[in-house]
Image (cartoon, rainbow, N blue to C red; front, side, top):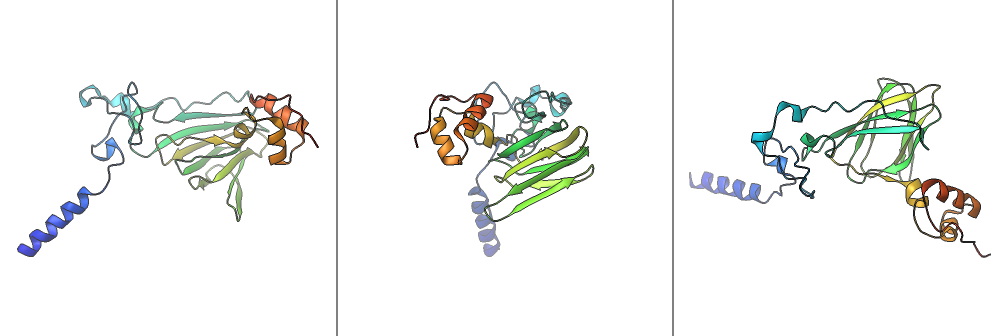
Length: 220
C-alpha cells in the first residue's frame, strides 16, 4: 500500500508539471471573449452561462471575392471569426481561386495546414532546403503542408477551383513572401541587390504591393 501511495503521489506531481497551453485544455471548451486581450493561451473564456448552441456554429464559409491581384480569396473561420475554436488547436477556411489565380509563396508559423479539394484543379506544394514536394490535385484529394514550410497553391485548371482548409491552430497566422519582399519600406536598391531582380521590376512590384522607397537607384 505504501508503494502504491508513492506511485500515486509521483503521478500527481508529474501531471502538475505539465504546462496548460490553453484555457480550453482545463475546461471542456472556452468560447473566446473577443473583447479581452489575446495571449499564448488564447482569449479569456466567455461566461458559460452566456454560451449557447449558436456559438458552436459558423455559417460564414461562403465563396470569397477573387477580383484582386492574386485572383484568389481566403474566407476564414479562425478564432476571431469563430470564437468557439479558442484554445482547441483547430480552425478552418475556404479557398477560392479563379482561373489563372494563385496563392503565392507563404508560411504559417503557427500551424500545419490540410487542403481538401472540392472543385477544379490546384497544383500545390511545399519546399524545404533539400527538396520540393508538389502535386496537381483534383476533387477528393487531400494535401498536407507541414507547419512553417514555405508553400503555394496555383489554379492549374480551366475553371474556378475551390478547396477547404483545416489548420492545427485557432489562429495560424500567415507570412506572404511577396508582401514581405515588396510591401515594405526597404529601399529598392537593397531589395534588388538581395533578390537579384532588376531594379525596375522591384519598383513595379513595390508599387503593386504597397511598398515605399521606389525612387532609389542602384549604383553600379
